Length: 325
Ligand code: ASP
Image (cartoon, rainbow, N blue to C red):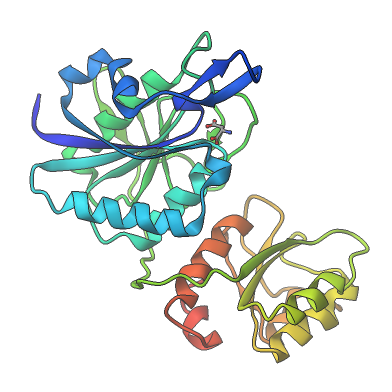
């Protein structure tokens, strides 16, 4: 057993919920310590300390709370007796908080997110196994520099790649484009690949006024006119395929850029990069020429968090563009 400890920070989610008769639904109810008590096998892995950060359903999570959680992680990681940190989190927005921390935190110690698809009182509760596996990964010494990870259903993912893909299945977290980075077997943790090109953003602020807009067929510029009026700082637009846009929003995008709003373009498609290969109206080539930033492989929700952090520090397109793709 490892001498050092793993700190488990609990934030809430289904993993900490019980069925409530009065409302006929799952509600936050389980404390951090109760959660740990449900996993007696942890005593064979390492010492555990529990820190309760919040007990919220993850749709209630905000970027401000993500930043506070990141600061808490960095504070805890300065203790030399801490080998790694596990964070339990609702699955709905888990990939967002994990990616925010991946960009934001300073520590290189392992930080591992996990949760459960089934409530603590449901048959086949997956949370106990997920916590055990997450602690095993966080206490593995060779894990340094793999960035923030998500451990779910015996599989280890990088925060940058992982996506929740199913509303109920316990095998919901996948990394469709790049694949998982490893897995947890009953005897040991096995890594299949290293993390490359991790981006970190050195800032102590976030820009909150960043929107995420998904394109649809026949779309016009109404929403962009509204956002210009609102004087927002930036927007992530999820285009079609390679990043192409419906023609009636082209003028709206140009007007946003003229109004000094940063526009980042990603795709509605979950795998692959956006790129300037089409030059028809709404194609990425002319959009890039008017000042749109290409967001690479990121999903819209992750590109939005990245832009929030970047605009916490930088204001110009040239400074921001370097960090995408
Ligand atoms: N709605 C829940 C949450 O994200 C779902 C879960 O934890 O799986 O808090």
